[in-house]
Image (cartoon, rainbow, N blue to C red; front, top):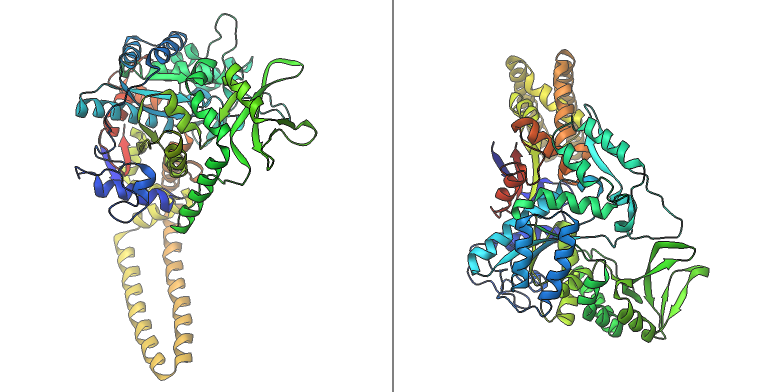
Length: 577
């Protein structure tokens, strides 16, 4: 087992904002004093937006008292019992009761745990909590915040596993009601779940992890599992020995703890809107992008209401603030008007009916929790540049956001194929056709490579001399020579590709290996961590190394990911299983 590290720019579509954020962390990782200052010492606005450099230990702030520690611990204890939490998790909840701080992360409640990045986030939260405890002597615990209030069912109702030749996406087909945006955490998996577990077990080759999946997604006391309950049980069990606290904050208890932020968003909506519009302008002026489009009149809140005639079904509708100071939810004939006083009454009577949007959610979260830092991926890091404007006004501080572990996991058979053909991870970040051509070019006989290289060198030298001479005679003649030379070089390259294609046809195994490598490492032309399910790699680890189905998988893949996250590398890890 080994790990190679590459710049994160290896991954496609890495934004300028995220690249500069990571560079800020790398430059400050070993500097003792990197406290946030407006504009930052280097003149960059990023330090002011993010609170502290994302690597090293500058993000570890002095602990602050949390007024609602007992009520928070009580609510988490009840959920811990429902999620099957073990002794380490209950011990961490007790630490929160006694004043511990938290390192927080979160994710949508994807089917069967969602993509690999879910495990990478949780592992990073565990590693950073351990680091903060060791460096300050103040207890820090890892918390995983379930995004159960989101209403994008398409995003969570899928899990991607692999067959021998393709990505297989499983779905429950959970019912979607037109015009109803039901929070995903409440959606029950009806009779389809048994069949899906059977399909998943086949694709996972009946590895021990399948037993844990069945236990977590089995009906309880006659009730069908929901996306939230199954996900929560699975994550709680996988990270049991690390004491990960999994929380669903959608209920009344947690919303009551965060009510001050929801009240601020109602009473001072205009001020927050102006701050966000100004931050968007700052981002764009600095050459960055605003992750969330902020429009005048848009609010930071959703209103959750019961659907008439469907007891138990909820509808989550965005609240819009109108020019006259009133509010509106819904659209068209279903639109409803609300006064500020009415919304404040809802907050007092049923705080769970008011839900924060993506930009307010971190502030709401850190009103509920004693957060030292948040662990996020590239999109969440971009959110935080905007959310910082809200943090300053609502809480008077900024919670640092730290990058999650970024990784590609290489299974032993794939690693063997890569070694056979001398393929590194950057080589695999391409289409199967392109990789097959590369493998074929490498497999060509040495004499053929030498002759083609020699011909190419002679051609380049002759063309360069001709271009120089003709360009000296006449500028137009020089341009024509440049065009002709380009065509000749293209034909030389075409000859190389034809020779590689011949080798590819002669060695059928080359294409087969190229297809397998790209399928596992760059599925559907996307980074593996964003597509393939975490449970796929838990099964692969168990197949390669043995292991029980859980609950904690001590010494297995989870422990390996926590170890990798502890390295604090800002790059991308290629981890061989």
